[in-house]
Image (cartoon, rainbow, N blue to C red; front, side, top):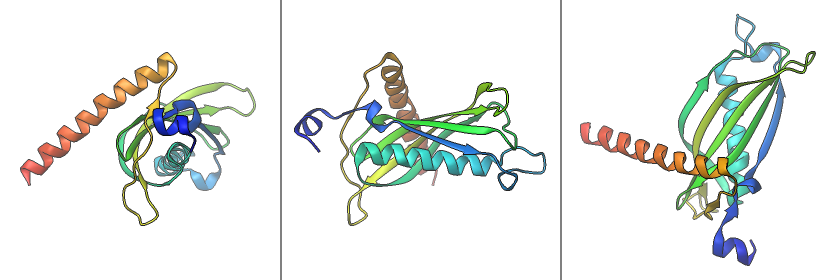
Length: 166
């Protein structure tokens, strides 16, 4: 970690991850489309890689805020997952994952899904560890950061309501 990172944080672009998968028959259901659970596995993997790149620590997933299933993905399609840290707290990070399918024959690319997950960095004893602030640079990153703060507040309010009902 350099002096600039310690003082200011890290640009969001430094957590960028692009992961690609080919949908094979063992990834599919009886409709010959990608299992939602398999996609969630890939989302978690891409999100963890982005969080590790940002924090340079082990991470664990603590929440899946949302996954939008907009369009099915079929056997033989190529799947591209693009992940980047959008927000950081003291020990937690939100990662946005955009998912695209590509027809290997026509080259057509369609955004099929979007997900937001929250991960926590861990120290070498498995305890939550401090992370550097994320520094949004582009308009999209600033917008993602503001929306991430709203999602966090909603998540905290939901957890507080659930705790009060227990």
